[in-house]
Image (cartoon, rainbow, N blue to C red; front, side, top):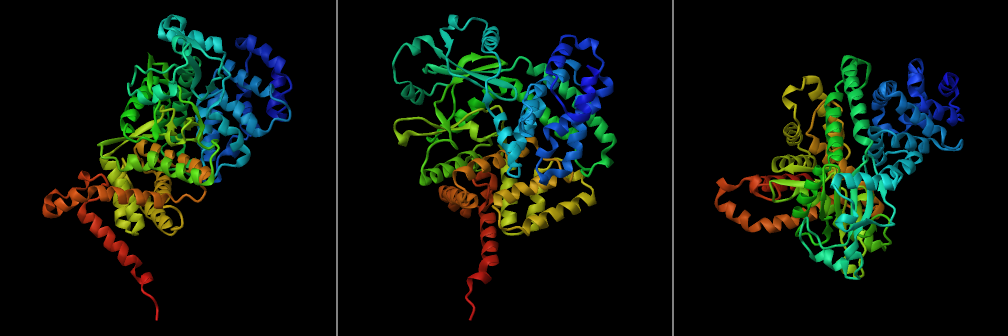
Length: 548
């Protein structure tokens, strides 16, 4: 067995899966402590893990590599051998992207990292074609094991509840599996389930016969517990050696804390259940958006919900004009409505990739809806955050560095603790952003936050999640309409909001003391609106005067 490990470390030959299987039968009798670092380096190089990181984030590569070596050196011998066996079982012709996919399926933290990387527009296509399968891959877990697990969770057999699994193949993601089931009573009828599920507004007592069970994979909690404990130790190692890395001001501890929070929410399905309730209420009056309704069978590890028939929006057969139509509606639903919500807290979908956005399958095209699925990652933006974000975008539009800097300070969590060197680098990022006027103002705002976060500025997790959500959504919209104008759609939506606010704005002109931006859906007061409009007009005035 030790010759096998030496072979793996030196040459990468993996044609000895039977020997690995034999070692798995007696992992306690095998000492691989002297080979772990070599195995870790071999896995990283052989799967091309670090090569998959977009060049824009090349400064992260040494940190990621050291973190993964630290992780592989400390996971249990049994898990490490299973990882080696899964690599050994692949064909000799397997591409590195396929090997990376196989590795990610064995480790929830890597699975999540792979999902995030796959949505980045700068991702190498050679890896992207494999990593996109991490979103909702085919079901690999044993269906009977899943059935038994679900029955233990809901405290009874499916048949005793009048339910049964369907023959439809489910799917599998980083921490959960999804399987279809149906009501035995309802499936015996030939009723109009589509009409029933559309008209019934009850949240947790729906009258539809088709469901899905989403359940946390039984092995995931213990795997995550082991991996997170190891990464906690690595955070301490990083803090003690941060001068070795280019990202000296990067707070790995805070970032790891955010990752742990996100993964803990995904493994406790009560979080998604609450998000679904909030989303149902938020989109209640937006007729072209559909949110799955919950069924009664809910636990910490199992969620039962309505099955929405449809296809991924990027895979639906649509004409050119239809794609433009749905791209605009999608952008309004996921970006415009949360930013300009009249509510004090506005929910947003935190993971709007193509597999989570369906167009419903209906006979009448006029009743087709956008179905937003998988609310395990969702956040809420408070009114103050939305106000500061809008000010940031406006500051970039009118090129007011003071407004931009003030907005960043208001959005950040550690503005008061930044040293002069970091503030100088922030000003440099602002200048770089202002010098690139060709991209969307929304993208520029998010790219600015992205760049500044690498300088040591800490932003709230929900704001970073919103940034990631828009980056993810951008890929979907570009697939639908490569010429989509995000700024045009955003300003058009703002104009409709201003029109809606006209009565209140006229009243506030007579009562200046009531002119509070927080009182407007747009988060812009009369005084600010006049100021911004005049300054924008003055900046464009020279270009509007003809030359003689």
